[in-house]
Length: 101
Image (cartoon, rainbow, N blue to C red):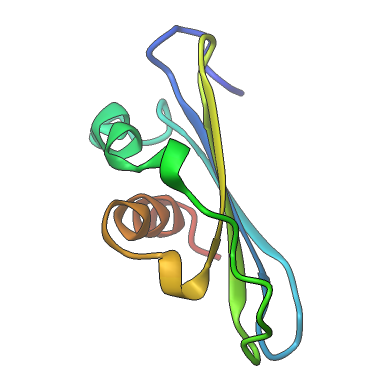
């Protein structure tokens, strides 16, 4: 269940590609992990500057789709493996750590 408070976030990370071309997806709500400062992690990501992954074929590269939304804002980005650094990596790692298989 997603919390509908304006400061509640729903974050989804999807990874496609790689050797087998499989898709994996992780989802977390800020209410699932209230100990994490989700707004700070989300705001640290350069959403408007996120470029699409390059069209050059990098063998077995993952492509990451990151979406963060609350009742007043939706942010989405599609990143290649090489772009998953800094704030992006911090956000993706935190979501994945909260939703291990």
